[in-house]
Image 1 (cartoon, rainbow, N blue to C red):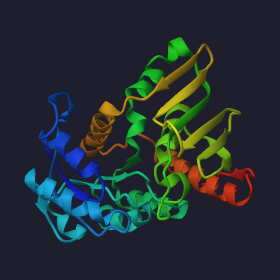
Image 2 (tube, helix red, strand yellow):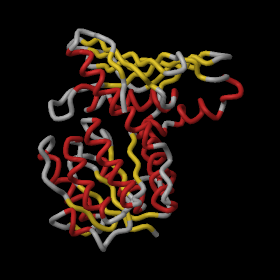
Image 3 (cartoon, rainbow, N blue to C red):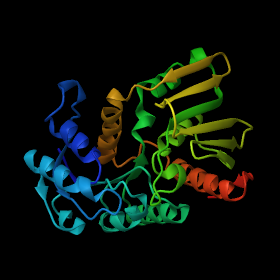
Image 4 (cartoon, rainbow, N blue to C red):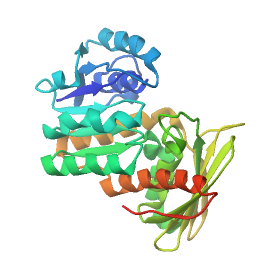
Length: 298
């Protein structure tokens, strides 16, 4: 049984993950075997501090040991999840665990800058620590089914993805919530994005990515009207349109995290995560440059 530690309690993910790993407070079809949350550090939140006390009490009620400092977890755990909603602190939070060689999951957004993302990846490589970051939307059953039906659908030629995209200055642009749509796009298209341009208003961001093989994909980040999660995949043999049912995305994500903790092998190439970070960073630069196309350079 993998002993998991959680760092930063300003997101409902700490409760949802603990419920599924520890088999408490959720239906049995959501349970994930092979890992258990044994300890956590509530941390200091600059984004949602009001959420920390309640989630801390929830985890205490599930029998999770609470420590004062992230470093206090080392020696008590086999793997760690960095759960801060604030992507700008993820590098700082991850350092002690990567230096200790612990398998590390970093929740979305991986970071809020490509420079930080590359530094985390370099630390993981230096210390031989397995590293993974993802939005749970990558593990929507509809996204997985698209790839499972690849023979029927044919190769993906392009895709449009959408998600809510509320804003927060600590997670600028699509880093805050629109990252779900970006992750969906990359889950469908794969890595290889070489340029980005963005159109934005107060109500919506529409970001176009250009792939090195000539394919084009877009993300619509929604801030007004009906929202949700979904995609249109333009394949060689058919067009696949789907909304994404969020009911089992945590279970899918946690299954992938558990496998990484057990095997030391990340479920996706870290370069794809770096591309996702660069995609969002370039979209912000494109907005600052009145929609100009910006090269994605990693």
